[in-house]
Length: 131
Image (cartoon, rainbow, N blue to C red; front, side, top):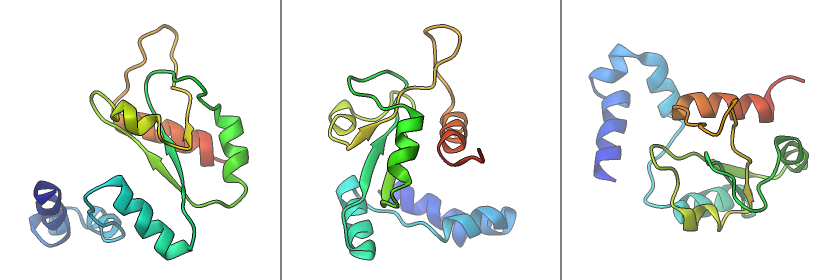
């Protein structure tokens, strides 16, 4: 957590804020918390109800939901948190405790590793892009 706070300060108050002002602007809309439960409490306190938790993963889990079905659920104006993992992904116990698990992004064969920023871009476009 201290490392996250130090990185955050670098991009909002330190040299990084001067080097990349648009990153500073984006980060000023975020906060660092200890756990997913803290994020859920924060969102619930702000909106008055628990948000839906949506996990992403490079592997398929039983009950994974398609993007079309997820779009329908999001259209009901629920609050939600999208979870993205890096490297080895999100801890499996967290993934399986979420409200929804999105189906993985698949390529032309079974190898579907993507840099997290690529996966985030694809998923956000699939869920919120213009139709």
